[in-house]
Length: 313
Ligand SMILES: NC(=O)c1ccc[n+]([C@@H]2O[C@H](COP(=O)([O-])OP(=O)(O)OC[C@H]3O[C@@H](n4cnc5c(N)ncnc54)[C@H](O)[C@@H]3O)[C@@H](O)[C@H]2O)c1
Image (cartoon, rainbow, N blue to C red):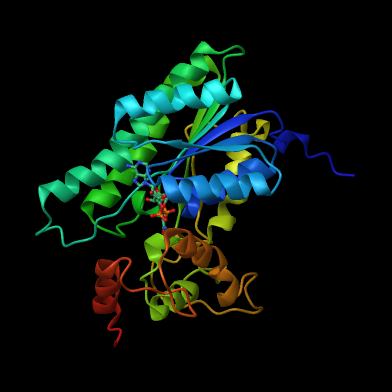
């Protein structure tokens, strides 16, 4: 029998921001399955409460805590609520994030400010409140995991999004260097294109292009992050800090040059890629077609990809 106790999170307590749907929900499910009690933190109360309920229905402990991560007071109240409920805070995943697409020569300052407020300042304010709790508790220790993006490393989206994520990667290094003295590990995970509601409007042709250019051959799902988040949340990563763990199926290795060939089918089929996406769209109350596409969720993403790839409507 294999000894997996290094990865066991039984008795640990965790919070995940932006966990109502998508990558955050995936992280919360992974932590709960590994044994942790989880707080689903989100500004979407309806979907967040339902996600907490679904995790409880699978036999795990979960609560919902409403919070807008751009509001410092709400963050402090949220951490206090989680600690009042669970007794301490061992693991925090700072995942809430947004993208506002648009050409950088035209984008309004308001859009820039919003993206930085959620993706960069929000991550910092959450990490600060979480670390204060981790420092105060006995034994003093904790695991902070920030969700960055491959866009921190490659020019993939636009300036506000890409630079907010590069900011998260570097902030992670700085906080890791500062908080190691409290036995707090700070790391980040950088996914590639993940089929969450963020990509509900991405055309089918673009999904195929992603598959063609990704060594592992399928589009990423929230589930593909389970292992990374459990590793960084558990004792298995006790000597890993300040690291940016790229979970991209090798996508960024190929640098958009030529399509790769395959010798065997990828582990995940196109039908399996969209199971979690459809679940998210149901939770959010959006209709979708058989491929899990609704061009109205993010019309700007649909039109940007259509223009870039010459997709005909
Ligand atoms: N989907 C991708 O392709 C992709 C790739 C790399 C990184 N990411 C990053 O992963 C994270 C999650 O993305 P996703 O694709 O699951 O997105 P999503 O839009 O599906 O879900 C985001 C969640 O965050 C919540 N949220 C947004 N702003 C918030 C705020 N101010 N306070 C509290 N909650 C807030 C939303 O309500 C939602 O539940 C983001 O940081 C995103 O930038 C996404």
